[in-house]
Amino acid sequence: MERKDVEKTGWAPLVRSLFSRRGFTTLIPMASAASRYGIVGEYVRREFSMKAFSAGLTNIGRKRDNNEDTFYVDDTIGLYIVADGMGGHRAGEVASRTVVSSIRDYMDAFSGSEEAQQMGTGEMSPASAAVCHSIELANRVVHQLSEDQGSYKGMGSTAAVAFLHGDTLVTANVGDSRIYLVRQEKIEQLTQDHTLLAEQMRKNPGFDPHFSTTPMKHILMRAVGIQETVQTDAYEMQPLSGDVVLMCSDGLTDMLSDHDVLQGILQGGTLDETCHRLVNLANERGGIDNITVVLVQFEKEEKGFLQKLFRSR
Amino acid sequence: MARIILKFKELVLKDFSLQDGGKTIGRAPGNDVVLENLLVSGHHARIDQAGGDYILTDLQSKNGTYVNGARISSAKLKHGDQILVGKHTLVFELDAAQVSAADKDMVEATMFVPSAGPGSGQPPAQAVPGAGVAAGPAPVEPLGVLSYLSGGKGEYELSKKLVKMGKGEEADIQIGGFLTPKVAATISRRPTGYHITPMTGRVKVRVNGTPVEGNQRLKDFDTIEVGAVVLQFYFRN
Image 1 (cartoon, chains in turn yellow, cyan):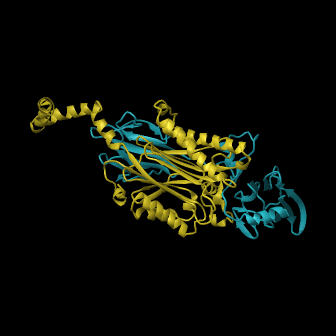
Image 2 (cartoon, chains in turn brown, red):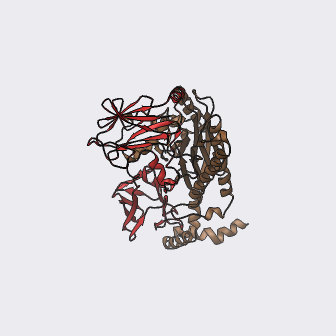
Image 3 (cartoon, rainbow over the protein chains, first blue to last red):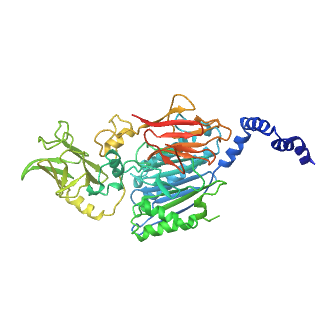
């Protein structure tokens, strides 16, 4: 009964008017009014609400006695973390676990607080600011632990964090754990390594790493927990449906080139299978360090080509 | 304790202890090791302590720094290494205890280079690059600017990490038109530069007349068309 009323008063005259001579003159002002009052806008916003789903895997590798990597994935709040610890005895494990739990706790609180979500500064959106603050918190916690307990002295960790807030993906890092974007069969590193080698290459683009007799890429210029403060690099982008974000510790990228990583992802299968494939490949090539891979795939209503590749759900 | 022994030909000139951290080497006064020789650059090289290791870095000197005959940009020093700077040789030596410890530690462990100590008066952001290698300050990432060619006036500085273009209230650059969505395109500032991405298929985004798919990195003086708005991108120095 109600539907009939609607038909009479709402849609029917509009539909009929489409076919009348006055169709265009009626429809266009109505539609533009609708868009002005946010009706079209609402439709657009819904279309853009991005969903993320993920898989993660960590492996000790072939040369190390312990696994100092820690990762975290949470599709509910859209938070993904990879941390690669360093320090004697078991301190590296403690450092990376502490980094992950501190960041998780902070971002959990941010996601639950509407007030916090309003607080941005200039070029920093609230979400970016929160990610940077969460890493600063992790830095303080790890640093304090290392000061308080002799066996933890000098421990530290990398941090790579991806956070999906609304339509915006924040990517942030400290150290040499990386975040990549795979979009339309191309791979792009979304982070800069904070290593001696990478800094040297940035300052001097002609620099030939083969000149070096040092494993310069294992010398970190920044790390979480080593000093009282830490500087985080954060970037923002809007993911498209079908985009895949890969996060990893250097145990993966020491063994595989960007091209190898891309090929591993493009082979398809579920995200889980892809994580295993990449970790296995890094181990086949020697596995000199712990290997951690996190894959996050973004999806909205439109079908991207990568979704066809990942038929996981 | 680690030390370097300065030699000219076979003549031992001096002995520098590395106990209190790194050393700078160059012709300019103020270096820890001053070498009066025209083949030596003002700030030629430096040695930094990183954990238990010592890292030698050439500061992009004119005539180069050599370790055991090979030119290096940076090298982790081993006991007995011969560093050639101009016509002088510096021999790196560890004491016996350190030599045996270094032998055990052959795994490629991750290390951290500590930044300049307290009292350097610099905030950490500046102090960290100074810790290692830099000859001069780190390059500043150039700022991208959009200049309206049509559909608006003036310029827009791309200082935000993510700039949205569309009809929505949150859009930084307003794009009119009935079919324009809230966000038609975004420009994201990334380590590799500025990237433009169309967010829907409904509004064409063109760079220099070519439709963009996925994303495209912006170059100096690219022309961007989004709906009725035409902008020119350039880097401000």
